[in-house]
Image (tube, helix red, strand yellow):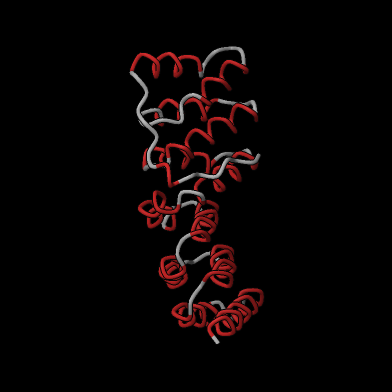
Length: 206
């Protein structure tokens, strides 16, 4: 489900007149999926995120979902991020993946939510949250994921964080990687992944 790339050079999208916004929001629940698709395409403006969030929770047609996600990406603010976060818990794998892709395209707006996401009681949400750090500045991703490694009890979450750090981490992550490997000394795949990540980070810094 490809999404448009956000163009930050254009700044925030202007707010729609209230009457137009209400009409388009109402059309998001139209029985005709083409009308819902057209409505979503017209709602990528400030103030539309709550209506799009409600529509996303109920929408089953992939093309309409894509239009809703794209509209949220155009909005690109904290409300848009909040609208996408419930999709990280969806049973539908395609919806989860699309939400991750959209959130990755809004790293600045997503950053304030990261501490809560990386501490979520659901380990699957924490795993997805590690992916959101992948498109953040290297120093930010390193700090977030190093902190996670120091306290995370689930080896699969640690493995996901190590995978991201291997790609984007700085040398500041190496102590946390070593400590994680020592803490999970009996988990062979984590020891191996941490060693590989340390080698990749060290080589990238040379």
